[in-house]
Length: 422
Image 1 (tube, one colour):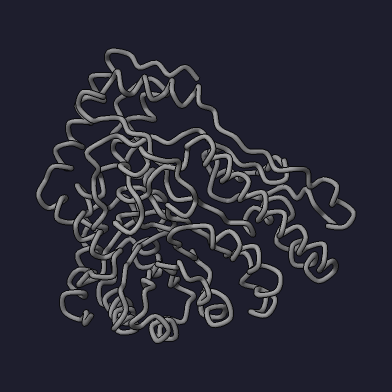
Image 2: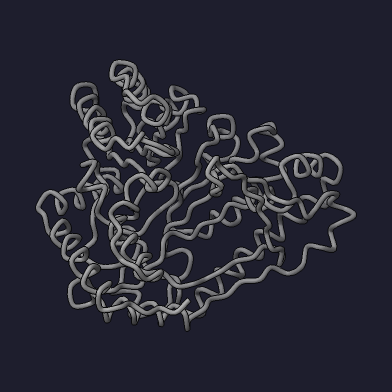
């Protein structure tokens, strides 16, 4: 792709950039930034709220796009993604006063290229349904296919894109290179090339070989991080940088740009994220034996850690996750025992990061306010005495009803106001 932006598209981007800057400079936005700092420092007075738009953005952003060029559309989409939450939903996602860009890095575990088959919807377009082609059928027989992992960075394309964006909007919004948290999900990568079924059988059929493979994943991940360190591509994660799943970096506990100017950063200077949704079918003992050594080795390399996505963390909390001394946020998913985790996290330094069920917003065209209020109230009760954050994820449609989504956020705020007791 050529990173060219026509004069016509440039004018469109400039107007959109001005909109982002206007929202970024609002007093309410600046106040919420300070709330995030207090929240992540365990000093917040109430739960923070984020309605993650990415999974239903196809209903929001495409109708707004005016640019014609492919790269210009990407930039325009990114601009809208930076501020639409603030404008449309009034949740606690905040708008930066700059245009963030990331380096084109890659990590290919064991040198295996992942192949995905997508289903098609009624119109012939790719749908959400997909299937990963299994490369490893029998771990022992196919072990030789696990080559050294490949990783690197394309500095040339990164600089070309950055220069094009700076030329278009840089005098309105500074273009700033940033890095989201260091992100590692080993069991997801395994399932992508050996299937869930084959992964489960491999633990039973070849326990020692499976553990060796997991050890290699940890070592290769840390080698990738070492490459980032050497190329000075580990950047501060202290402000607007994303931390999976669905939260933000704001902190004064990790070093910022002033320190980065003085020395290369290591993994200990930044946020990291891990999850293991794919191991919900194994026992806590098996997780501890087969999975956790790899996870603990990677997780211990981070400065601060956020853990978990949709998997219930309560079964492995006492045996494993509670041992992660740098853990700051843990996902309390719809499948998690909320009360159990509330008891464990009460008074701790780990934030109760609640992910409500997406069904209330995403399934029914009409929001059942009473049922949703009860759902949120149950979570607020379970998390009393904890530091709490609420991120709504995995909503794939809002039925093209933006007012419903805004009302959804307002209901959470009302329940917090009426029922939250820190």
